[in-house]
Length: 138
Image (cartoon, rainbow, N blue to C red; front, top):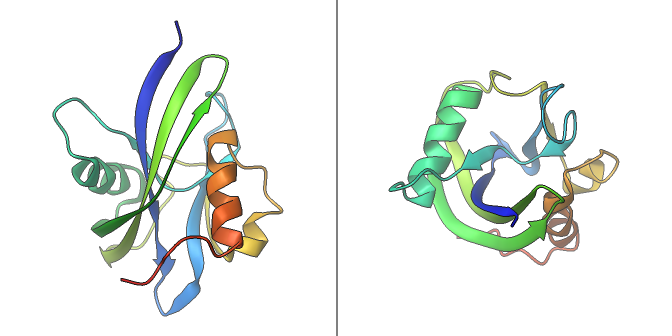
């Protein structure tokens, strides 16, 4: 039986530029090495999704987030894992993003992101973002 994990991700706009969002490239050597994704990570037992997202971004990016509302949810099954992916709107309230848990970081428009190799679980999310199907305003 394939393990299922709940993963939260953040749609973080570049300060002063609401058209570009932060994406990160996974580390080499691990699962889905060097593919791109939205920042975030696994929800630990007893942790809320918002708390998990704030913790993951603190640990992996060295930023503090103000986590907003849920924007998107999807599910993808890899050969080794099923991912329940939930995207939240978020904004950085302190810190400058650093690739502590990533190979690289970039602020990009959704259209620019389409040129990158994304994790399969993130592709429907990226397609909805590019097509304008996500309600980004508060």
